[in-house]
Amino acid sequence: MNNIKYGLNSNVSTLRTVLLKDPEAAFKSQKTIDLQWENLNFIEKPDFKKSIIQYEKFVDILNNNNVEILYLPEDEKTSLDSIYTHDPMFMTPNGAVIGNMGKKQREPETLMMKNYLDEIGIPIFGEIVNEGTLEGGDVIWINNETVAVGLTYRSNNEGINQLREILSLISVNLICVDLPHWNGPVDVLHLMSLISPLKKDLFLIYEKLLPIGFLKLLNNLDIKTISIADEDYDTLGCNVLTLSTTKCLITNGNDRTTKIIEDNGIEVIEFQASEICYKGSGGPTCLTRPIYRD
Image (cartoon, rainbow, N blue to C red; front, side, top):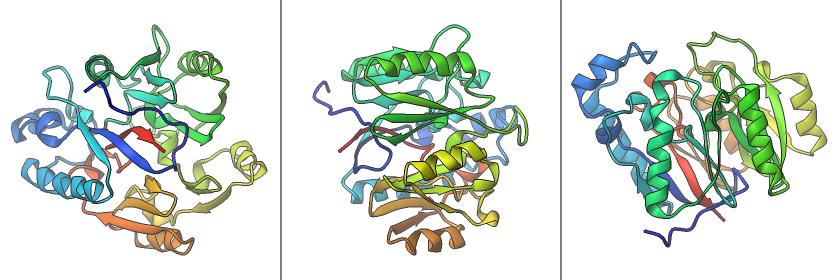
């Protein structure tokens, strides 16, 4: 598997290869779900059989859009959260940066990710270590030379500074975005909970929770922002997976936000996501770790 194409410096160029972990490998069984879901702060208990059906339909969408899919294997150390493959790493043009999870129960995921990338021949460009924490859900490519990183309960100053040093090796700038307390450390508020790039000059946002300075920065970069409907925030309406600059993927039930996106000339594909997204507070972006975009 050492001929896999890798590398990206965009959240919006055409998605070609993605890394997933299906429910059979992440959830394992209904018994495992029953034992773990409350401790992991899931909103509700997922149904294992329904999660498999929903995930198969999600994968069908990716296949129908010519996305190559790689799968993380089952292991004994990670939890239900490992279905959200976006978070243990961040991809650069030069390879992967392995994170260091801010949620303690997710710490084993980074080693599992690193081992798998080694197996398939994707180089490790850097790693967040020691007291630094960084989760992939807090890192977004704003343009080809700029990355924004959320300062959150999951990604701390030390982790962000380590990433800044790593990215300086390829002349990429890092912007730190200080996010609010919101519902506190037990909840998940990643930067990608609040912003999804749709095109290089069009970002979907939830502006009520974004700092003024960051909104001004986007404006100064000539990036148009469109805000999701308030009622769609809790149903992950701002967590959108961009397949290309003309097509994106969103969880069902976000009708107003879907219309807002469509009104800006982008095709929206919806999928049923109660068991694999809503109950674990992770949208289609969280379910995927893009490996290669062109």
